Image (tube, rainbow, N blue to C red; front, side, top):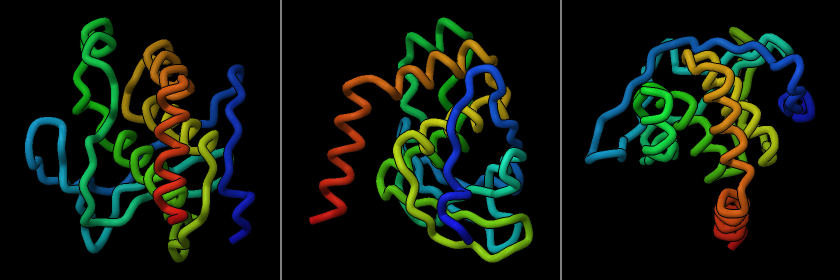
Length: 161
């Protein structure tokens, strides 16, 4: 697979359309901390129509899920747990700068992705999980803060050592 095909750019007037497929398996370890699992068949994955690719994450790693502030959840009358799929995918890409990518039915490949693509996949995933467009936009803007940029750099520096 061409890694460039896996990258997405957000166009605010025409958002990429996505849908979640497969089964989400996770075990809650404590509040806002999960062990991310994957079934042997029908893994949890985000399908993006714009490039006809599926994006996923491996099994057996810990995640804090979506890092949506409680105030934002209260504002929109939702819970962080409503967006676990998107949170897990975004968290995994932030930690590794990689994602499992394939054409539907094809073989999974580990592909390097940048922060912009990670954030775009978050927004596509949120919308696919039922987030409203305003809520997804606010969360998307939140991952473009200085704090989020520092987190991305910290994970990248840790991986390079």
